[in-house]
Image 1 (cartoon, rainbow, N blue to C red):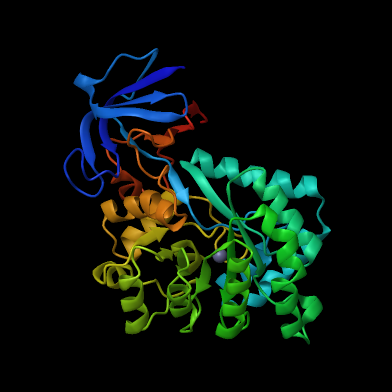
Image 2: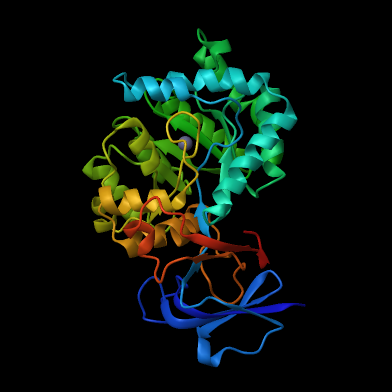
Length: 392
Ligand SMILES: [Zn+2]
C-alpha cells in the first residue's frame, strides 16, 4: 500500500455537496487529498491531512476530478480536413460525410486503428480526461464493427456499439435489411465487447421506429441504451431516450418544450449530454443549456471527438464553449464535465473526489477551475493522476 498526500491545494473541487462550501462542487479552500493506491482515501483542509508516504505540493493551485468524457468516436482512420475546409468555406454539413471515414477505417489494419485510438487517448489525458467512452460506427460490417469494439475494449470500460451510425453504403437500397443486420448478426458479434448500444436518430440516418428497434434489441442483448438525439433538427430521439430509460440523450440541440420537460422529469435516469464542439465545428445553433437546467435536467458536457463534426479531444475547450456560448456558469460547466459525465455513464466511482472514489484527478496551473473558461485555449492542466498513478 502506498499513500500520497497532495497538499496546499488552493481550491479543490470534490463534487460532494456534503463537504466544503456546500455548493454542488463541494469546494474546499487550502485543501489536501490523500491517495491510497488507486483510490481517494481522504479529502479536507490541508492542516488536518493525515500523514502519507509521499507528499506533493500543489503550491496553491486548483485540483479537480479528472474529466469524464462520456461521448467520443475514436476508433477510426483518416481525417476529414477537406470536408471541414469546404464547410468553413460555405457548404452545409450532412451525415453522409461519415462514409469517408468508413472507407478509411475499413482499409486500416488493427494496429493502425489502435495506434490512432491511443494517440487521441493520450492527447485527451494531457488535457485532464481520465475516463472516456468511445464507440464503433465506422466499420458498418459485422467484422469491422466487432474489431472496433474489441480494440476499444482493451483501453476503456465504456464501449458503445454504434453499428447504427448511418445505414451502411452496402445497404443503400435496403435500409430495413441493414436494421436487421444491426439487430441480428452484428449485435451478436459486438455485444460481448460493449456496455452500451447507441443509434444516430436523425433524418438521413435512422428514424424513430428503426431507433426503437435497434435500442430494444441491444437492451435484450444486455446493453444499456444511449442515443444521438435531436442534433440536426427536431425528432423523436429525446422522447425515445426517456421512454427506453436510456442513460443519455446526446446533442439535444433542437428541443421542443415537451422534450425539455421530459428530460427534466427523467433527470435521475436520462442525462442530457451537450456536445458544443459539434456546434462549434459545424457553425450550428447552440443547445439551450439554460432551458434544460431550468427544467431540472441533468446536463453532461462531452467532446463528441470524431474526425467529421467535432475533432477536439479537449474537455477544457468544451467547458469554455459551454460558458461563453451556452451560458452555463463556470461551476455548472465543470460539474457537467466531471460528475455529469459520470452520471451519463452511470458511474459513481469517477467524476468526484470523495473517499472511496477512483483517484483520478487533474492539477491546474491556475488558482481556480474558473480559469478553464476564463483562459480559453491555454493548456492549464499541468498534472494528471489516473487510478492514483501520475499519468501526465
Ligand atoms: Zn457522436
